[in-house]
Length: 384
Image: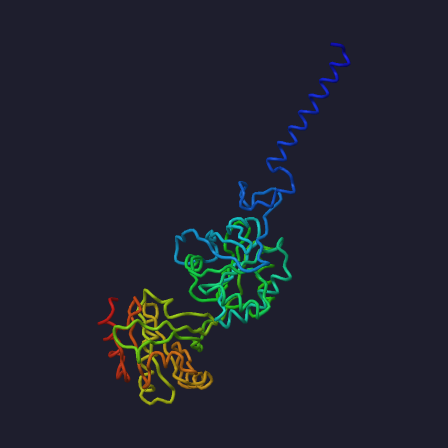
């Protein structure tokens, strides 16, 4: 073989080797075009060289799949956020942990919660004005059906990302009972702030974001002590009977407390509850009120959940009455008598004693003559 033919063969071999290597590399998905389009592929989402694929909510809502166990009762600032899985509107599966390296806002809400509804324009503005590179916004609807939320979103003109948690899988693991609740999760998956109640302005949300971005943490300004204001009933399920009596399961009414939190009676399952219906104009109710105040003062810190409901009165009337009489126990106003009617309360005062399983164990129609009368019932019914 002459020298020229020898060099020609070497050149051909080199070119062939380069072609085979290029084809193999391309088939392995090593090109930049493919990378980032496989959030469910072999490469863990969030570890792809091109960064985290953005969930697609442009065509609708996503849905929660499952959630890791929570070793504690609730998640507070400083705790590691519990990882969960969800599908976006395009059917792609993501985990919360996929967004490691990014600041995440995780907001829990419902359509029936008026404070949540008041907050949503601020949530939408954050979604519109803050880029995905700056913050990942995820919201979770707690326990509602798809059609209800879809209609609400369409009528409100909202487009921020929503995951349906119909079975309350994530809501339960995150210890979400009252809403709205918002978690701010840092780049390492640590909860830096937990906001209970709604944000009044977009600026309030941005204040938290900017402080976490600037300092890596969030320190809330000191709040004024709770002054036991008024809450109000927002709904109550239909009662199949004429009234609620001993042995019946207490109807799960919903209310918003004095801090603007949406709460249900069932949120207190596992604790005994005392629910008292009364009115400012009722003379016998007025005789009983000092005992309710004493009970509230002396039994704070126990397992007892004390709820009082004003029957059919305006909040301003009740607030003035409470202030004039220096009463501070919790009061819910039921101006439209949603809970009053479903509980079958015709005369006041009427008091229900409900056990840890939500069953009515005693019903007192009429007023208590002394603090001891109330304590006798509590001590007989419940093991303190």
